[in-house]
Amino acid sequence: MNKKLLIVEDDPGLQSQMRWCFEDIEVMVASDREQAIAELRRSEPQVVTLDLGLPPDPGGSSEGFKTLSEILRLAPNTKVIVVTGREEKQNAVTAIGLGASDFFQKPIDGDILSFIVERSFHIWQLEQENFALNQGQAQSPLNGVIASCPKMLEVCRMIEKIAPTGVTALLLGETGTGKEVLAKAIHQLSDRNDQPFSAINCAAIPENLLESELFGYEKGAFTGASQTKKGKIELANGGTLFLDEIGDMPVALQAKMLRFLQERVIERVGGVKGIPVNVRVICATHQNLQDRINENLFREDLFYRVSEITLNIPPLREREGDSVIIAQALLKTFGKEMNRPNLYLTEDAMAAIAAHDWPGNVREMINKVKRAAIMADDNKVQASDLELSPHTPLNDDALNLRQIRDAAEFNAITQAISAAQHNMAKASRLLGITRPTLYSMLEKHGISVEEKTE
Image (cartoon, rainbow, N blue to C red):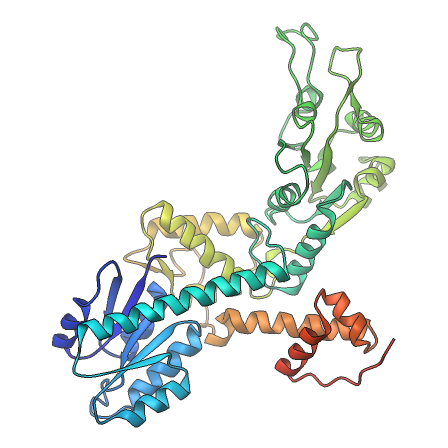
């Protein structure tokens, strides 16, 4: 764990004294509430030491309490240690009641302060590990997928259900919605995850080459075929074959693909011998296949063969709350790659991201965030760095991940209870949780239900 400590103290002498108490800890310093909140957003420290006597009320504690409340609202998991004078025990008690994790009294004793801070880091880490364990038991995370909106979480749950089976899945969604990422998630959660994952974009390869790319060819099959070559299907034997943009597959090749899907046997171009292939097939397209069928551009029998299970991937503009979360995750990734780990989105950037329609979906966001990671001055990523128009800043509640998750949880519970016709046993099964857990969640969200039995 990269330990980060924020010291909020207006006395320069005490700032230096406290800074030198810590080794192997990244220490940031702030002198007032505005600086403290800015540094909190920028660095995301796990632990904060907070002097309650901050300007413009250095002799009192009002500004310190305001800072404490704002820190815990923006980063509720942060461990805040309040620093008080000897005669201010009541302030320490009040701060603990507001959510501070510990307190320390002046004058500064380096050994005691170091002990309290290390203990807070330890508690923070234990809580994170416990949260990760609980999340792992509640749901299987999909590698590479960041989602909090109900629509996308439902897609993730469907993927978890179909992955262990051998069913052929069809992923429908606009360009850039992450269909290949989801296909890889299906592969990784299946019993074929230690076997090859072979992907081919049917729209990116010329029609006269696509057949040989898929099925391979025998030596001498055509001019330039100096040796036998396996195709994508054969290379995926034992694993998963991902046919991206299958809606653009030439009609002439669709008949051969249908035969393969029915018999799981291929013939290389120029070959006469059937080769059995054991492969799981996942397809994807941004096309409306029913329209393609009506236009005689896609075989109806092939459609039914590839769509044993169909997943509709929502575009980013319909994934409420996800755009800012995804952008922040991408910025962290690109920041580390570019040795700029402290990059952060300003409020105008987050507002612009939330307001943008993202016609290119996640792929467009990747390009814009990567550019911003390069172009940003200092550590601040502005809307202009993202090439987005400035927008009215979001309120903090719209950016609070806990509130976003709570809203999704509330919606899932109410929908399950409605679908189960107020039968708690059935509702808990729909949600994949125990009845006691459901009752706890009802109490948490203040949901009143007239229960019915089976």
